Image 1 (cartoon, rainbow, N blue to C red):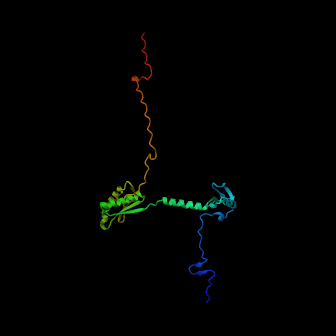
Image 2: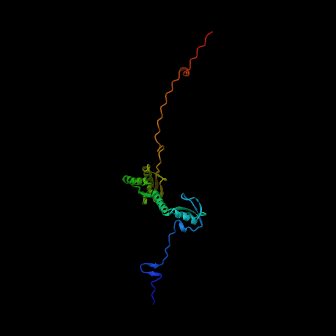
Image 3: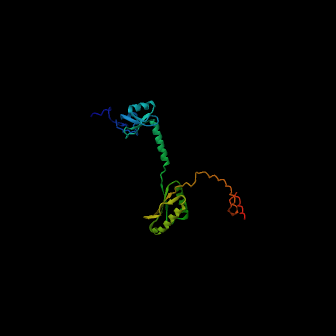
Length: 234
């Protein structure tokens, strides 16, 4: 029986199949010689904006030691810029990373009570909930009823309202406590800090005191006017 030849395709020990097709990741933008349209519209500060043949645009990019990058392929003709493509990708990834770091996702933290939660446990859990709210997270507090404890649902509602009142400085109730199955629950969201009125403005300059007005003369006579002479008797 003839053995398969080692040359050519087929299986090779430790190397899998020779000639296996590995799909390449498609580039985000078409650049340089991958732009296969007859003409493009160039934009940017380093070019004279207008329509050029693709060969002219490539020559302009080469003269500046930069890349011709297609940024709007759906336009007619496609819009391109002459830029450093590697630097463009680096700046873009850096900006996306910064935006992702700034965008904090709000988490839902759970706090569990029972109808018989004592004061020490209540204070301990209130402090945890306060720290969660200060971090910008929501708090889902619930009272778990077991068996006949469901008859004390009013006690559970009072406990949740007391809990919300304790956190009133940093959080607010989204809605009144409600019963779902054997749980009485309430959701408390963090308060958004409002900027006090007038913050950021400098103190007002004191006004100069006004000079006191001179008192009016008695009888309503204007200041500086001469008294009328009595009429002569004939």
